[in-house]
Length: 305
View (spheres, rainbow, N blue to C red):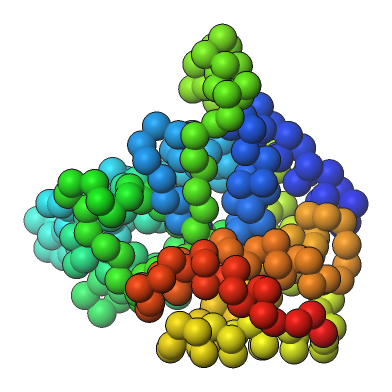
């Protein structure tokens, strides 16, 4: 696949997503950017604003296998990754794969699951594999986790540990639609009926080819220095600050943002465009201040090289 065809696919995906998630063009672009950067996505918002619809739309348009798990307080790790089950006929254990064996896994209301169950996703998200009883099982490629999270003040939620937050490349907020968009939603057919009519624009192999193009987007030395300055600033204003994994995430997301724009090199504006989505949730648990405010301070104080 050439770069021109890849960008045509991306533009079509964004247009089709915009038909079902109204008035959220920036958030939709950030979500696609996250997948192109090979990252996992956390969407934090109140129920009923389209989080699940977005995940279904991405899977349908990108031609990906899709599984959904509804997280509850009594869910066990085996409910996600699977388990070895004894077969009496063969007198041996047989592995029964869980819903994690898919291209796109929606973990709905992830913070309603217990910390023990949440941790079951850690190896899958980081290593693209799961280990059960000493045996390793490789996940399909590409593999993404898209998790939704209710606000922490709601009843029955558990705060995600910092180690798991750090494995989400981006955290996004959909929020309420603007009045005009919500009026259109009220007048038109239910969004789920529109979702059912969606056909795949790409497939898993094409998506992997697009991801390879994203990894080739050029990053100059001054841009690397700008990223490093931001990482250093985070460690000064919200110690211990952003991890090296976060720095790699900033690079990949900025490359994907530039690629969506049709450019072959990263600009400072690309880093700034993805900064809040990549950095804020990683700083939230490390300071009494809001992570978004810390990112605002970093962007205003760090000079572009």
